[in-house]
Image (cartoon, rainbow, N blue to C red; front, side):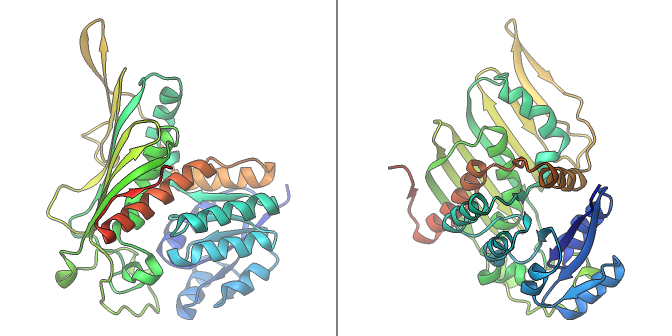
Length: 358
């Protein structure tokens, strides 16, 4: 089997903690190059993971002898790097969020179609045990019509990389909704069959700007050479109320800092059954399916299989590259996610609803 040569753009936390270890465990894959504008960081990562070619200019990595580019750079760079990689004949696995605007997303998919390259968005929660159990059930109609959806990712004091690109408005595009809320938003849009947003009402808050505390991510060893300014230019909480094309309503919330409960959560309300997905890291609070059997209300706790989400995500991407098949992250789904987040920020800034339907 011919080895697939991989180049990675961005040598920070998600590359070192998730993508590189997963790629190294994947058969028939060789990481041959890594790029980061931070010379100290990229040289450290190259030595640590035995990657022979290191670059401080991502354009040079794209020109190298590689088959695939994995993009782990700041959010604002994703679209340009994805497009240039595909136009250079490389397949792309791009970290979330795919991009900052729906216009960028449309262009990415147009380039993928024109060049015939594989483009996949990195949304590991699609490979979770919960998704594996619930997606087939929902697709078979076992929940009935899904009419109300809730999703959230809340932290009390978890601002990532305070003063680095994470809290730089130009590079990040936004705060927790762009960073962590996107995970749970993508999961419920995927499970619900990718309904499109029609009306979006968003709010955002910056209540912890003057007392922001670094949340410990990315890990210290992946921050070598970073020069943190201490500035917090993005929101610490954002939320959105969305009317969807299938008539359903979605509420999504995300925070890095707030005086609230914490964790990941999602719920889908259906006419036949409902699903509650609590924080997957809370073993005492399992997934529950709420239903009715012959007039008796029932709560079902399904067996959720263990999963190695990042590894399975990478293996799926490599399989798509080898077999030239469409990835699990479809254009319609990604566009819905991008439009919702874009709409939440636009609505919050304008203090008025964003109406997308004609």
